[in-house]
Image (cartoon, rainbow, N blue to C red; front, side):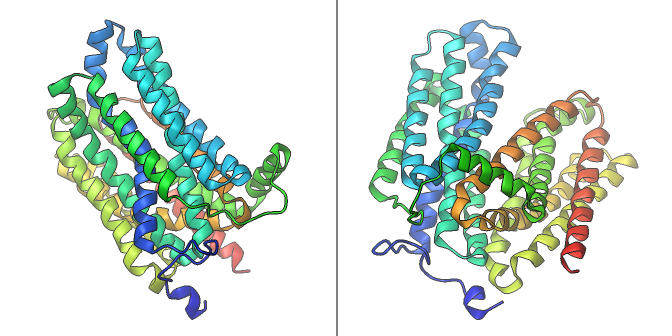
Length: 411
């Protein structure tokens, strides 16, 4: 690996002439754009009881305001990446933010629960653009090793936003009612849209012929047929799914299995968020020195070891939340080290179709993660064993798959 690759550039290396930007400006802008989706999905969680009371609807119907939004967010990830390859990064981001604002306004004006569900779906669909296209923009601007660091910075924002936004949502709901959430999001959405319109450059490389739908489908099929891309996608799906399964099932285990008050989960969740944040931070410090493949192996190995330890502690009957959340916090650290390297490596395989690569990865993570959460929710929550058995098994599988793939590529 050359010194040029290992020495991170101080400016975007692939920007169009006259559009060179400092790393700090790029990260700040893309983090602002990317944060809209995670904040919108998580700030709403404290409002569920208030929405239930306002519309006097059954809980399963109210839950659709969350589940339908998650589905729309996954579908949006599959749409906006290819659109950014076809029409450009800037139009895709601006369109997504505009759709987000329209959906948010619909939520404010919603006269019925069905209108609120529709508004949430439109809002989530639009918010997915920033997250997906930001990865493609980073791919346009930086070589892979530097791209790993930049994605790690963005992922740090993705960890902070879901951690802080439920707290903010709870304050707004208590003080001003559930619709205040959407008033806040509408204002934030308009500001972010204005910032993007003023400052976001077009970073996609000029092409002689823009891909049509058939060409984009062929690109997707070609990528999925590449074993190395499929391998990175597998790693990304497992990392995200294990994380999603734990944070979705653990609150029930805390209350039902461990007999703890629901309010304690938020406190212990800080161990997971902190672990992820430190893992991302480690990538920003050591990516250029250690290389993405080395960090990927380290991160996957740490995650697998930590989940096995968590399962062993639960198996022998240690029931205090610390025995659960401390090893899972270490797991989150390993995932925080691995995931930026997985994402950068996968997207960098298709520099001319970075939007498509980002979309395939994001959609697979969301869709398979949601299926696994639904499946694990059918198991008893009086014990952490089903959840931890899944997490440990999937993490070990990821480690074995990585070892096999490296052995195959070395021959």
